Each structure stands twice: as C-alpha cells, then as structure tokens.
Image (cartoon, rainbow, N blue to C red; front, side, top):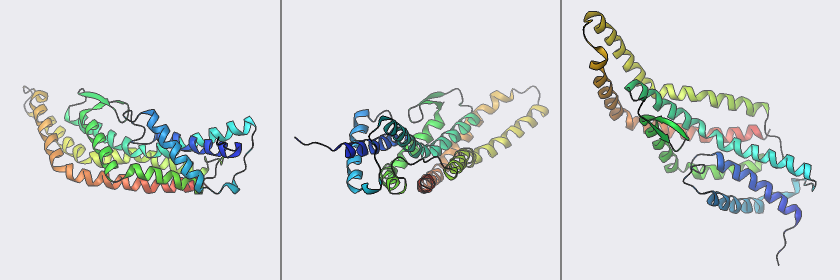
Length: 258
C-alpha cells in the first residue's frame, strides 16, 4: 500500500486549492459547460505535476490546524485573484456590446449570457461569445495553466499576496473595463450622436412627424451596417486586448510575489 507523507500531502493540498480556485474564477474553465469533476481532475493532475517540480526545501509546513486554515485561505484567495483578473477584458467587451445594443434600440431584446451569468442584449452576448472563442483560438486557456505554473515560482505557498503593488494593479485593470467598452463602442456612439442631432432638427422643423417611428428602422439599419463593416476590425482589437491581458497577468503575479 502506497502512503503519502503528511507534509507532502499538505503541500499538494495547498497547491490544489490555488489551482482549483483559479479554475473556478477564470474564463473558459469557470463556464457552466465544464463539469466540476473535470475541474477537480485537472486540478489534481496539475497539482501533482507542480509538486514534482517545486522546490520543497523553501516551504515550511506546520501540522497544526490554525496554520493549515490560514494558508488554505491564502491559497484560495491567490487562485481566485489570478483567475478573476482575466475576466476584466470580457466584462469590458460585454459592456461595449450593451452600449451598442442600447443605441440600436435592442435594450429590451435581452437574453441570458452564459459566459458572464447575467442578462445582456443580443449584441453584448454576441461580442462576449466571440471573445470567448477568440480566447480559445489564441490558446488563452493554456496560458492560464502556464500562468499558474509560473505563480508557484514567484509566489511561495502561504505567502500573503495582497500587496500594495498588486492592489494598485487591480484598480488600474478594473478601471480599464470602461475604457475598453468606450473604445469598442466609440464608432456607434459617435454615429448615433449625429443621428440624435438630426432627429432633434427634424422634430423642430417638422413637429407633426413622429420622429421615433421614422428613425427606429434607421437606427437598426445603421447599427447592422456598422457591425458588418467593423466586425473584422473588432476581431483584431479583441485579439489584441486578450493578448495584452495575458501579459498583465504576468505583471500581477510578479506584484503579488513582492
């Protein structure tokens, strides 16, 4: 019968908690289509591989319950932070889609977004699902695993990761959600602003005209025309944003390890 030493079991358990927490909060792996058993299985396999490559001489393990609980909470927090940071770009893209759909008059045509877990208009859902597909195509799901491997070489097990530099980076990355949304939706915002000005002029010149009923088909036509023109550009922009946030993940891990 094979027995695992107590110290090795505790180390593997702490590694497993960080990896599983990252899978629960990260894109792709946190999707409801991925069963929990698959996440646990992947976490166990990766935890064992990390354990074999880890320098265990730098890890001081205590067997008391208080030490184990404190370090378990620290590893869970570290994993959640690593996985959740990559969601910022998806939130920005989804918010951009909601702005576009609102201007097109599709704010009432809402459906559940399975990626984010809340309702959004159809344009927001479309951009969100497209960004998720692009994230898989550029091997973003593999980068999450490589980022977790890298985190164990920078952030030692049980280390407090909520440093000042990590907190400042999180604030900067989270504030970028609104910037990403405005950049993606800016062609629509400017175009519809001009349409609103034209509507105001028509309402003043021809008061008898029902401007809303006349302009609504124009809004939809203009929106779908702009989408048809800008979709290739959006794919390039979203790919660039996702690649940039992968580099931001490495910067966050370094800041958490300081």
